Image (cartoon, rainbow, N blue to C red; front, side, top):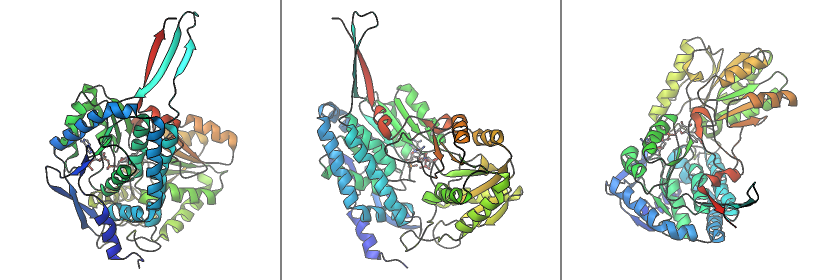
Length: 489
Ligand code: NAP
């Protein structure tokens, strides 16, 4: 049962502009339109503009033209535009959350959480816009003076994924606007509506035309490759898969672009024997099931001390097995559909591979029949080394649990991955916590908590999870260059 009616759904979809936003104007795409579907039903929601390479070039032209004026725009005013947009998002939380659920599938409650999280980047960077500072120092020999200043990088290309349709955008757009950069934004083709709604909100908040240009496209590579090669572009910030990140880095090397790469993850979730197991299970539910498991920060493997592994796996299976699966617009739903059939097939194949090698499904283990791309929450015990889901990013509601004997083994298995985004660690021993945190090869650690995301903190990874940080005081640095002036007194 849903308290949201079909006409209400239609209204929020109808309200969103469906065109490209270039140079402050909404216009059609040269390739016609592309379809956006509801992953809970497989039915189309609407059509949005499909950009061709000429549209992308026009978007970069507009960003380049607006660049010099925007770089000079008073930081306070840049911040106030962001602040107004933050407030508008909060005011429209319900409709934006519904829109997100319709295009991406996550339950309304989670969409609301993302709307709040996404808006927070605009508030945070509205405050950072007026804190861009330089340095003045005496040279060591006492003769000259060393002056440094921060300046906007210049026109940026921002490419975002479908899993957090709003927040992955605001995490880049907020600091770029605050720093005085202009930009071309390309959201994922499966979830363009949240970003289109955001562009409209920023326009209404007073963002001058040309500062943010938005292109939606059915052919990402074809549309963005010429921009990446264009000498006027100065930076590429990408959030998405490691595979595509590699390709983009190769392309960007020709133009020596500044890069930020927020890529895939394979987060270990470690529970020591001294941990509060109930709290660890609660944390595991968040780390695994937030966003239907489709988060780069999702716990991908659970390494639990032998003495408590069975208890942990059984409690987790009980909780995950009782979660309500269904269309995210319906009341009480906790697990929505996966984004598409490919993603669901990938999850199914990974589970089949693990079970084929001897893993036991304590709960779940199956795709759901019928419309939409649903997969049952699944807990696997006794997962053998070699199972593919220990190496690959699962991106679905599947929790493999394995035992370990001691601290050294826990650290070794946690680090045994090419990825390095986040790790979760549960222990009540502070000395052990700090010892293990220092040895973990990740950009972030959740210590006795199952979620790390916070606009005020530097989000990002190491190894094949990428580089650069989004959020926190570090986030704006990605959009600033340092200029040093040697001063002869
Ligand atoms: P994806 O396939 O890499 O796509 C991400 C974005 O890149 C989309 O906008 C996509 O456009 C575009 N794209 C794809 N191929 C391209 C190309 N050749 N040239 C230029 N752009 C291209 O990733 P996804 O499946 O959307 O997202 C899931 C991945 O993102 C996971 O690996 C997840 O871990 C990662 N992620 C990382 C973070 C982080 O902060 N580290 C956060 C969220 C997600 P189309 O939509 O048209 O394909």
